[in-house]
Image (cartoon, rainbow, N blue to C red; front, top):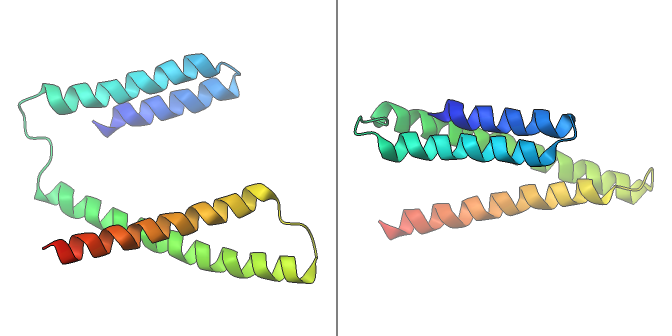
Length: 117
């Protein structure tokens, strides 16, 4: 099931590399629609408690890695800016702000789910 998404993303990236973005977008959407078709179009149970536990663990590890990267990146950005060793590119600052926003969103959703019980 997730293989169709993987095929769509890899196809999109390959088409971008070959400078065919519209073809890549079409391949991407075929992969996404394939996922939805399998998910909604079958009566077979495709997801059980083992999948839920695996997804929960993968999500937890992802958030932990993002948190460590964000903390280290923030320290590096402050040092580079303070010493004027180089100018930090706007994309790097944007990436850091995106990681920070993801952390804040996770915290807000975590609190919502925790206190909603």
